[in-house]
Length: 306
Image (cartoon, rainbow, N blue to C red; front, side, top):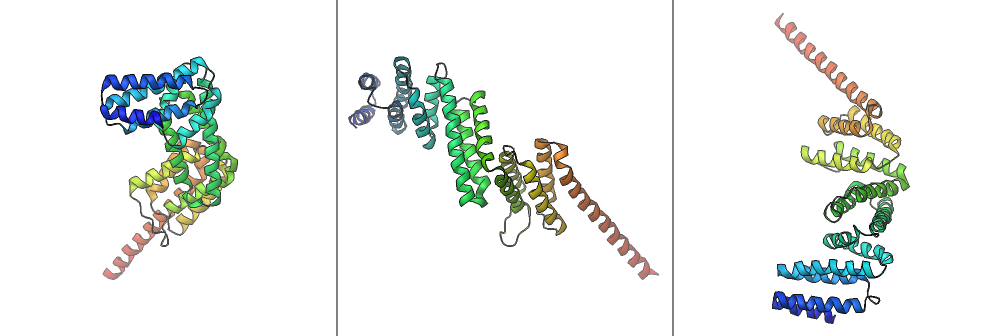
């Protein structure tokens, strides 16, 4: 608390030399008690004070000293055991810049592989929690919940881990792990979620623009690509599709074709044969019916003339 008070007081003075001297003294003090205070608490303290500051100098120095402190800690003692609680704390608070500090300090050291393992572990654990919550209470919001989680982790990969290919691969493996804990159920709910948005419904009164519909389809199938139970998804999707087409409850032919296009791109032509065949059959039957009705109208007119 006294350290925070000193930082706040120094920040108010907004003097470069005073700020630098104060942070140097604080850093020296923290190194003396480094066995008594977790590194991630120190990093968070510096970064929190930097965020509050209206001074760019203070922000930059807090960021710099966060890195310097952690680098010193890496060199002087093994902080491997602190990586998990550090990263977990920062992930839960969505502290993107602080995670970047951690990555900057670890990427060129022996701790980089450990950081990668902890990143994947956290995604697996938090993802598993998401799945359990969805299956218990949030079935109708499955895609929104999982996409929100994915967007959060994607942003950390891009901004904090600088789009590192190893961390992105760890992200992919983690999603495949927790989504396939209940693969069949997730596949079923994804198919039903698509059906909910692709069919006309008086009850839900869902109305989407073309752009919104494409976004929903893309987001849904982004989650679907991690799921291994693709045959289960196919069965439920075909059931919903047949109902929509036969009862003329499809919201949009273009949306149906867009789903087909994305699925074909993700899973191949063999996977989409039945879906494509069903859409073509209905389209052909509508064409035949239209021709028949047109010919009848012409015959009626000829009869009236005669």
